[in-house]
Image (cartoon, rainbow, N blue to C red):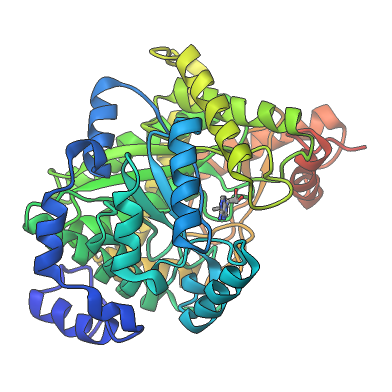
Length: 483
Ligand SMILES: CCC[C@H]1O[C@@H](n2cnc3c(N)ncnc32)[C@H](O)[C@@H]1O
């Protein structure tokens, strides 16, 4: 069947579903009617969608860590520690890399080896192998809502299992879990597979179960211009809404210039709502998530806390509904539960000190909001055009043509012709626009900002600036000044 941005019929959905549930034995544990009864018992305070709605209505920013280990008992211990000692408002389960690649056999070996070794030998929680039984044990042992966080191009079985288990949010999307995470998985396949995941959410919504979906905001997390990540987030929100998703959290990864970062969150929320309404999805509740610094971290823990606090402060001043927390072990790898809890306490202390405060509007902030919206609009309108009014087909075409182009992505389906660089204030600008169909005034705006930096640094505006910016943070700076 040709790819189209059309809600899957129940017949199409249940037809695909039969095969999906055979991908691993635990698929046979999923019984949708039984799962609906189970999910109806989820109390409001443990429902991800409802807790986000309440936070937005109260104007508070919730703190959520990443966390995942191989064994159920250890994972429960970890999550309990993060909510009790860390104070986490929302819980994850970060899913391991084998599961993300549907390599469940290797997950099983990882679980068995972890049991023998007495420690986690997987870099996350293997939810498919643990199945509904294991995931429900996790859900029943915690106090807060729980979400699957991963990077899975084909998340259909994973989504079935975690949702049936009372996990009321699922991260990912057909673009955001393909281009930054896979080398050679076609955009058409991941758009189609994530239509399935969204249709599953839509099916539960039709049974009266409120669930949250969260496109993955930061993408490659390396100098991603705000309008690129906002464009991807809005496309995934539109595709999800068509499948019946009613509660979506759009996300953005901190770039480092605070005014631009706050503008990105404001533009993202406003433009997501604008496009959802324009295309007839007026009943979708939109929240935002700000990801603390996704680039290289200092190994020194005191410096790492500085980076974490700036991210928390930016999220608060932006009025983001949720902030994803980093840890002082970021430079070395998977954090201990103590370090993870420290990152959460640092974040919550910062959020509390800034509670109720927002970055006031200013000419600078308005300028950044305007340029982000204008750039995003250029891309979205072009996707709609090349898709002849169909955002699914338009997305596939847009990546083929480089209309949307994510920097430093591993996927061979990404053009990789656009190059970013920071301007003299550290804001991320377009050094080369590749095939992105920006208007002249947008191109001129970005060029002028980079010329300003060149004049200050007494050097030409070249790709060397991009290279210097990539290495800058490892040297303790935001902007890669010439040595
Ligand atoms: C987009 C995700 C990258 C971030 O995701 C963190 N991350 C990955 N796996 C785990 C895990 N199992 N527990 C705690 N954090 C984890 C990394 O450190 C990085 O910051």
